Length: 522
Figure: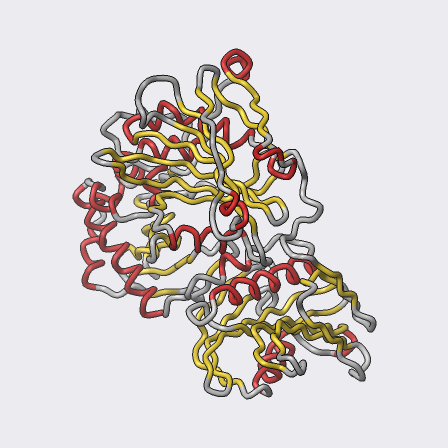
């Protein structure tokens, strides 16, 4: 599930302390039909029918589409809904790696052809690609208007779901799409209704999405045939890798060092190298070697330069393990050139038992070869998660670009300028309209006004538009892909300090959380 953002306000004036956390609501607000955010709140609330309602008014439907056990599933459907018979052409089944194949459809009772409906479909993954990347591409190709997106777990299956909007004639519809991956199969449960009626059907759609259960469990959690590599020397490490990748362990290394190279290549008829689509190196260092994480990272970058690689610019820094001292657990991504051909590399240094691991990746750019780019990053994620024993969302974070310090300063200046205007006018309507969808769902303009009511009398806020913010922390994304910015304005007699959290939404950074404080200037 998407963790709720915390929106906090604190002011220190004459020893008065006011703290408000808007991310935790103790009372459900009244949702009016005219409230455009109401359906989004219903989606995020994810409220299910009561157990009594389910026992009384729902069937646990069993489907075996096309008489195939691998496509069989169960889900909850309200009694009285109509099951629609579907005919799937043979050529559609043969192209299940290229499109979504419909498996089931139920519609609400009534004569309205556009009444609410629940649909189930599936597609198949021909390569090892992350579910997040697969859906990103699906949304782009189908021009899906994604309003809210979140990841989580339903009934021990990982899901990625969105709320989308689409038009049909003169009517606006909302659709909840819940995707889950089972080996090489990806299922989607869709609940759609007119936007004006979505709240009415939201619990029914939630019941279908959460109760969905496949009959045939995947033999493995991967979409592609995998092998397991285990290093022979010390330090030892092992991980999964696709069988299509060539793998070679280094020989003759100094004591306390191990290394393995992995390549995704296409060879000609004479088995000569034609194209290298991806390269991953994993190196192990025992602490007895004396190698520091900083030295491992520097040497890894130099090793990659030996393949005629030149670095252009660093496009991403992400802190995957915030409890580890830099550079441990800090992902770097760079644009590079290899013999005149553009590409990208990434580096990551990790603690490993009694030593360290240094991992490096090279791949083509997504605009040059999208499929190989998604595949190489997915394999890198598998390796990282295997050697750490964690679940790090590497493929999700890699799609983001790190803003420059100048861009962050401008972003903070706009946010704080808008905040100052809203606080002084005691009107947060315009401020609320420009924040992230997630924050809009959680905090109404009225709640923001109440949270920051004490700032209306702070004269220092009037000076924010004439001053530049001072950014105090390193520009870096966290393990969730969020951008956190801390800083202050040199206002007097009270210094204005701030802590801002941004989420990347619809191709831009949007405010997810805000903390502002007035403290006596030093």
